[in-house]
Image 1: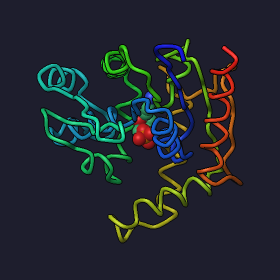
Image 2: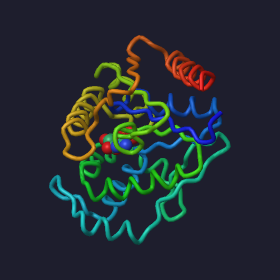
Image 3: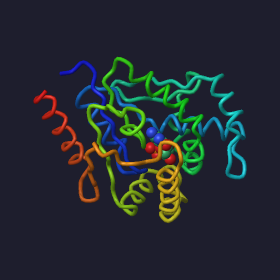
Image 4: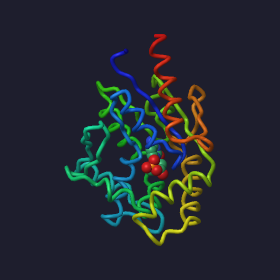
Length: 230
Ligand code: DC
C-alpha cells in the first residue's frame, strides 16, 4: 500500500459522515479526523467569551484568542480524535444544540477557515487519514486519494440528529432539529468561502435506504479494490 492515503468524506450535516468515517478509518487503521469538531471548538470559545452578538461575531477578537490558545487532538485506542482546548477535552461541550445552532456563523468566516486549514494540514502530515467535513475533497485535500460525498434526505438526516441529541437534550423537538439542519444546509451551500459542493471526482453515496454498515462496506470495497489495482 502507498505510504500515506487521504480519504475525504464530505456531505451535509447528519448525512452519517462521522460514524461512517470512523468505521472506515478503524478498518484500515488510519487516523480519523472530524474537521467539524474544530469549527465546533472555535464556536465554543466564541460563545464562552461572549463574542457572538446579534447573529454576528467579533472575528478580530476571536482570532486573537485563537492565537493564544491551543486546539489539539489526542487519539484514542481506535485512532479517533478527541479534541482538546488548552490540553483539556471539550468533546462533550462541543456537541450541544447551542453550538450546532451557532457554528455556521463561525464556519463562514474566511479568517477562521484559514486557521482551521492549517490545523487540518498539520494533523495529516505523514499520516494516513480519513477526514470528514464539507470542503475536504474540494479545498482541504483536492488531491485526496479517495473522495466520497454522502447524502440523505432532510427527514432522514433530521431524525438521525434528533435521536443523537435527545438523550442529552430531553425537551428538544424534531421540528427544531429539522429547522436547524435546513438553516445549516443553506449556510453551508451558500457561503462565500469553501461552500459545501460535491466535487466532480467524488463518489456519491445516498444513505436513505442504506444501513451505516452497508455504506461502510461500499467505501471499504472501493478503497481496497483501488489499492489492489495500483
Ligand atoms: O460536521 P459537523 O456538523 O460537526 O460540522 C459543524 C459545522 O462546521 C457545520 O455547520 C459546517 C462546518 N464545517 C465546515 O464548514 N467545514 C468542514 N470541513 C467541517 C465542518
